[in-house]
Length: 257
Image 1 (cartoon, rainbow, N blue to C red):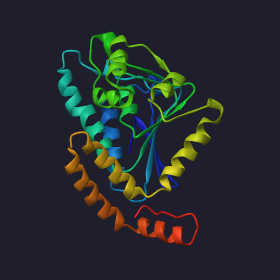
Image 2: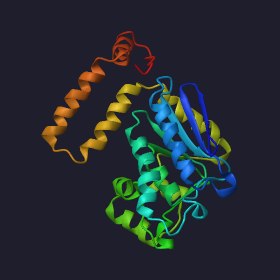
Image 3: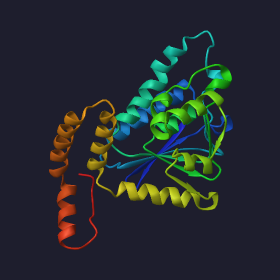
């Protein structure tokens, strides 16, 4: 089904791997569309309760493959037709997306990492705002997500100076959730993903949806949105299981319903 990515489902987790290791998983328009379609597929699959997005080989994603772009093209249209729908689909997916950053995440690869709900990094990972080095601005949601993670001043510094951020510094800045040694990387990613896939998926989706909306919502509106979402969560099977497990003094077994 896919040529530039690998797709696998196991234990309620969708494993999506950028698969152009010879090009450090650089983006092509085909990869944009394949990722978009993969996330659409995941959104319709109730068996999938968490997503791991990573890269094959030694890179997460080195950004746009410049050889795939006609330099006479309107770059705004490249974004509107390729990157923007992909990033929006990730935001709309009401399941947790884990960016497993195994190596360099540069340019649009950095943006892709930022669009994930969680970023766990190998000690070999690094982040780079490469856009400035070719006279462009960060795109694909980068200027939306970055200041929300690190603050306005640090976001401006990273975007304008374009200096590489190593994994330990990324953890310090709040760019990543957890940092793991390369030796135990694969086991740690699987363990983290399995934890999220065993949680109440519907509640996670509602949290994700309304956190996004909260940035442009006044308090009285947010209180009503929370009440609406809580009604939905309160009617879920997972909520009933959580109550039952609490009363029976056992660990709940959530099924994502």
